[in-house]
Image (cartoon, rainbow, N blue to C red):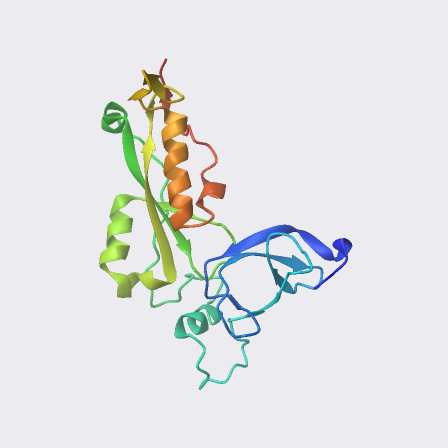
Length: 207
């Protein structure tokens, strides 16, 4: 549907499902954008092919007998000033990215991230290995089904870029390795590349 460019917000978003549907009641997964009236449309930019989306999230007046997905109903009732999942859920504590001397000696380490599925933003929280394992092993306690988790390997020592001898990789580069890791994670958890933009974070760059 055509809308003048001046009525379209110059920003786009991504949904991995559970937020919007098209008129045929099919769940929409992919990029979307908004107009100045906060209507939601398919695609990163507005074209004649853009389709108007409707929300899966019910209004506060939704019939309690509605067949709307229970996870979305829980999200709609969240007290935004308290625990994001309510008083009965254990929060997943975020952590700062730390690198130990053993990690530097090894050259790389795993990193763990979590994103709340119902959020339309690309906000991720980094968590440590213990928090990640607790959330995975105790899904009821942490309401883990309402989160998206992603792990990746992060190189913290080496040359900046991959080094080759006779077309054979002899030294993986920090930037090159982390770019591959983030690109792979982006396929599994869209939006993580917008969070991990410093691909040499806390790395020791060697010649």
